[in-house]
Amino acid sequence: MLVVEDDVKTAALLRRGLEHEGYAVDVVGTGAEALWAAAELALDAVVLDAMIPGPDGFAVCRRMREEGRWVPVLMLTARDGVADRVAGLDAGADDYLVKPFAFDELFARLRALVRRPLGARPAVLEIGALRLDPARKVVTRAGRAVGLSPKEFALLELFMRHPDEVLSRQQILDHVWDFAYAGTSNVVDVYVGYLREKVDRPFGAASIETVRGHGYRLAAGEGPGASG
Image (tube, one colour):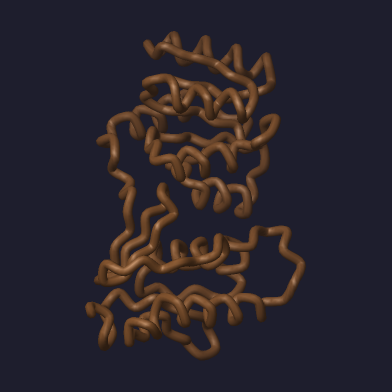
């Protein structure tokens, strides 16, 4: 078990409580140390504080998933805000807990995470002939490579994690551009256009649909020409 917590008192409490539950515990205090530990240690789970010295917990979790490390992650956040919870889950966390928390709840959540089979989170997303590998940052359609910018890749990944769901422009802004973005929602329309030019049109497909008055949707079914 890895605990990533920069507050010395909280880290000590977590170590003591988890060891009492029978876990072998390693404790680190920074994002850089967390990434090293995730790469070098065999871990059952990670208890990861969101606000640690850089990179922060969100970035650490995102990097772990990009590198194909699917160890269960329980994110700790000091703020009971939707934005923090969504950011943590979108970064790849499996669950979250708001400080201050009850240790009984922490232990119960960890037991549930550790019971899950390793690798349960799919490393590769596939919808019809469209394939996206989050770890390798590779997209193909019908076996042909599709070159995307980082923002285009993030947008397609969001669509592929929510097939057949209508995503509003605001939802897309919050997930792809982050909560601090101060521009207009028009950037979403622009990037959806870029994505269609690369992912749909060269393959004779029309899988990224406009839902008037609501937003956009990635159809799970294949459009004409999508498989060849």
